[in-house]
Length: 473
Image 1 (cartoon, rainbow, N blue to C red):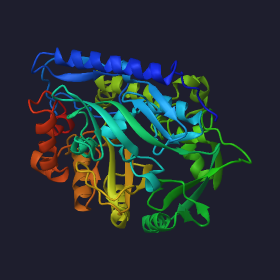
Image 2 (cartoon, one colour; image 1 turned 45 degrees about the vertical axis):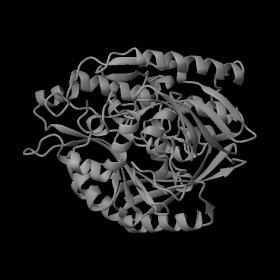
Image 3 (tube, one colour; image 1 turned 180 degrees about the vertical axis):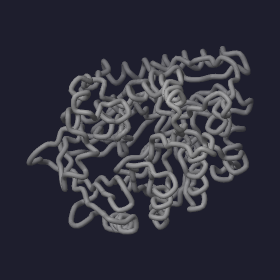
Image 4 (tube, rainbow, N blue to C red; image 1 turned 135 degrees about the vertical axis):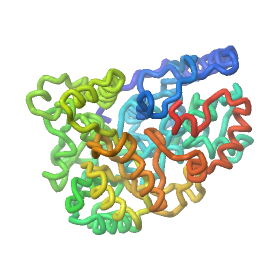
């Protein structure tokens, strides 16, 4: 298969033995930490966006101890016969897909950005254009090895003694423990993906088409192996429907001068290699590379290709926020303060058109990413209670909006939270949240979470879910 070649382990047996040694060392390192010392993982990259400046709610609770989890960033084995892989929890999807594509296989859901880790996508949820068929990444996990908050290393799987942790780990954001390895299902791929971009002039028509695709598995005769969409305006929306293909009359390339999201407006159909399809959004971080000038032709020619990656842009944003460069520049120019509105929300498809119109009228940011999803199985997952069988649409929006003169930071994010609640939806917790503790635990099944916290982190060595995801500790 085309794409990056993953670094092979010496043998699966050697990789598994090295993994067992690393597990023992990590368990010992965790046990040696003094009680009450905050813990965090020493990670090369992050896809969280909880930027909270001083005075807006961040609470520092002392210097945290860092756990070295670099040994868990490898694919341990891929079994083409059973279509499964055993993978370290810190393995990026870039490396995971590099290993599986060599066997003509891919994870059932591959989140859009290369440096998202498998463990992160499970404990923090993930989504992509196969989610209408295959649900979320955690639904293709068959077994998880977890270092729990109370220091045990347990294997959680459907039906075993840690079944409750298996079901409750998704959306727990590392507050119950850390995944050390995961066994996941894979599916076969073809060399190419054939995409068709269907245009709509109203949110209602677009959401009606989503419902039709969910029911029929195709749209206008085009099989829907992949489905996502882009809303540029309330009267300009597109659904991109992709199907696996063994052949390609031509191949698009959006890693050079051409920009993927711009092509959606220009072309009715396109072909990409499966590798390029999986990472079509990463090169320009969807459309968020614009503030760095990378979409300007001259800058793009000079910007090294190896730096056209989401993790590079994310580091630039973190540097800007840390040193308050943009906010200082705006203040010096006497321009309105801007609020970062970086969220993903899930809305029932029946009310998704309402959300799009509300968002356009009250926030006004564009484009907006749209990704239909439906739980793969017949059971709900306690901490993110979507209803089995129901179709939802994920809306992703990532940027800044000028604040009205009489409003403070948090204004737009609170508007979004309130509307999502009004429409019976949920929001992902990787970014800023403003819920009260009572409302938060009402929406994210506080009773189930607190029972899991008591069972697997009774002494509270790890932060609680509300403290981590809302208070930003």
